[in-house]
Image (cartoon, rainbow, N blue to C red; front, side):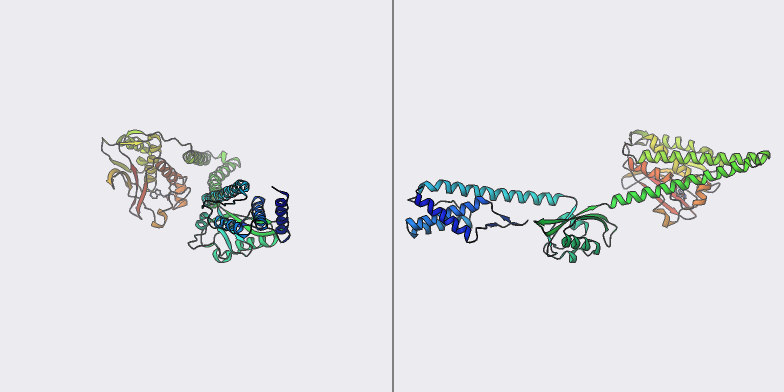
Length: 448
Ligand code: ADP
């Protein structure tokens, strides 16, 4: 390149820089990207060449090159070619620069698509609010968390998410450029969210806010269940312990000398100790059933045999109340189940049937087929369960009549154990009852 050309290029570059520089902008959904010095250089070189052409070769070459650069800008896919009869040695470096520029644009585009995919696949709700308080981005998870079925981008955040605490967190972060975390309850639903707000800065300025929402509803539910459980267990333990302590103190205070009274008190203490034992056994069973490590060893089992084994287990209790257990189960019905677990569930159901049926009542165990499933029904002629309680009897410690259940030695955990056993088998348990007439529990089985 001659001295004259170099001077022309330097001259043009200085002219452009002095008159305000070059700012190329590439549009994009996630924002705008200012081109790097490579692009500025491209313009400088191109402009330098144009000037040189003006200086040396007249306006025709400049026009041709201008057309080519315009075509490149309008349609980058078009083949870029400039014919410079007098400057062929510049064609290669210029074409290389354009190739680099194209490469950069395509890299930015694929980066942008990747970001969009990542944001959409995140399970936490993401909300980007611009400095004007309008939504710049909201992912699908956010729309799901807030049940939004409208398009959100471009609308004011306060109009889309009508929740004062969320709005306050975003506007404070925008105004002060600070981040924070808070817990919010979605209005009109039972959803609990953990919200993290962080400002987006450009230099010293806060140009927007990113809010991330984590759904912690399940966590809060579990915490509440744990609290209720601890309270229930403490209450269940306290009742027999108070009785044991009370009778022991009475004995110590002199009742020991009265042999008859002492015998009665010792028997009461023993029955409360038995109750504590049952409670602990049930709690351990339940915790084993609820643990993820529960192993269900399914094997082909004869259903009639299973029912007979369980009836024998409760024979003493049924004889005491003069209740006969009638079983009508086909001798050849083979089902797939873990016999130990199913026995535990069946004994609990038979035990309840006896407990909540008056003397001389009736308990029947029989099979039926319904909706192509085999069901085993345990039906009693007892007191029945009020319809409003039917949906809750499988909950831990739920009792229709607390006093009666305790008086009969119930722990309030029997049906919770039944439900866990059945669900661990992938089967179902149903209950039907008519107050004052009786109750039927039905277990589904899979035949082999
Ligand atoms: P419990 O140890 O109190 O019997 P369960 O979990 O076995 O606890 O049963 C929960 C409640 O359901 C009982 O307290 C009782 O009120 C009711 N219940 C269960 N089985 C029967 C039944 N066969 N007839 C009437 N009520 C029943």
